[in-house]
Image (cartoon, rainbow, N blue to C red):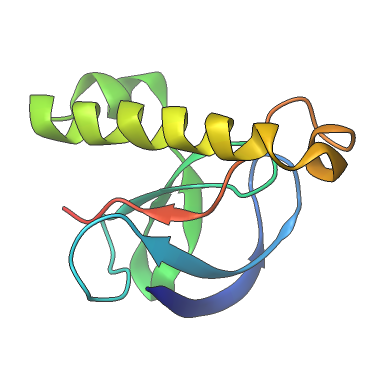
Length: 103
């Protein structure tokens, strides 16, 4: 399911982001949820007001094993999806589908 989010630029590549698609559950994103940029594959987290920030290595280090596994699975799915979208791959070296990784 796809959920609208406040329009903002990806902190990684500047692409315009306006929605997130779900990996699990049926709710929209909330602060603390992770997602991936649909263009550059940046690992992001929703903060207050659904403002996106880049996950730091420290953030990733502090993930629970189940969260880290979900993030890895989403990254793999995004990269496989990108292989079917050559128009995106020509613009950015890695690409992805916005994926809400609900906690």
